[in-house]
Length: 164
Ligand SMILES: [Ca+2]
Ligand SMILES: [Ca+2]
Image 1 (cartoon, rainbow, N blue to C red):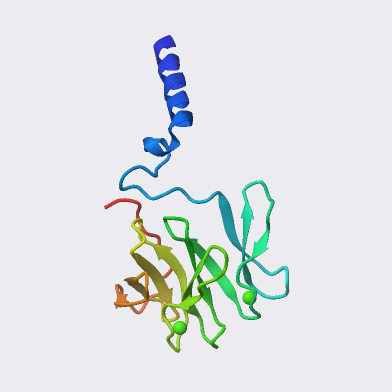
Image 2: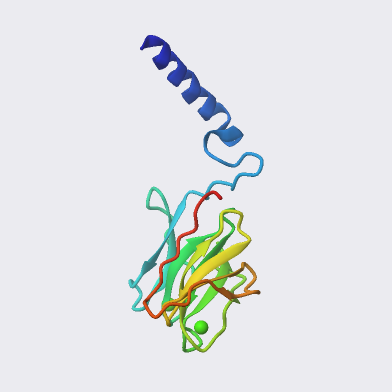
């Protein structure tokens, strides 16, 4: 019991000292940890917007600032970008922006609705669903959109596994 306690204490100290060496991710081949912010959707300015806030509640920032519906924020694994859905062209598309709200890119740009982006762990691909209730995957630059399901029932809300 005592040995286990000492071992746990040692592990705790090691994790504090070298947080990138394998205790919390970020080592070789691992995704860099998120930047300590929470992205969420808010109606506080009269329409859906993507906001980010620090985990202590400070530095609340509206990243989308558009009268359209902006929703379903998803951080890239390296913490540098946010994928989200917006209907600013009249239909929902999957967009990408930097974490400061710049560099907005429409990844899907189709006349039907796409929503609920989900990143692959390596950040190279994004899964999403469309208004027909099918699941798709594409490269993170919007290329090679591929439908994964073909079912008369509704399929949605994709979630990517962290490992193989
Ligand atoms: Ca909006
Ligand atoms: Ca679309």
